[in-house]
Image (cartoon, rainbow, N blue to C red; front, side, top):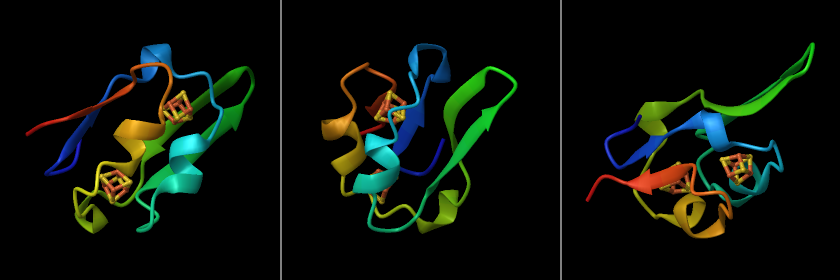
Length: 65
Ligand code: SF4
Ligand code: SF4
């Protein structure tokens, strides 16, 4: 969770579209031993631009507003 978004990693497929779309490097990658999903690495960097919300095709990232 950041001030602007909340994530539910259960549905994450690890496509990294949100990682690539975020202008503030908010996301990090978990990718080991069959675990492949996004995580929030830099919550305080989030500016609420919603690019990640728009790009995720699996409903993982929701706007809190
Ligand atoms: S809302 Fe914008 S700044 Fe915040 S995590 Fe998503 S893409 Fe990054
Ligand atoms: S865009 Fe969605 S499915 Fe792809 S890595 Fe990000 S949260 Fe996971």
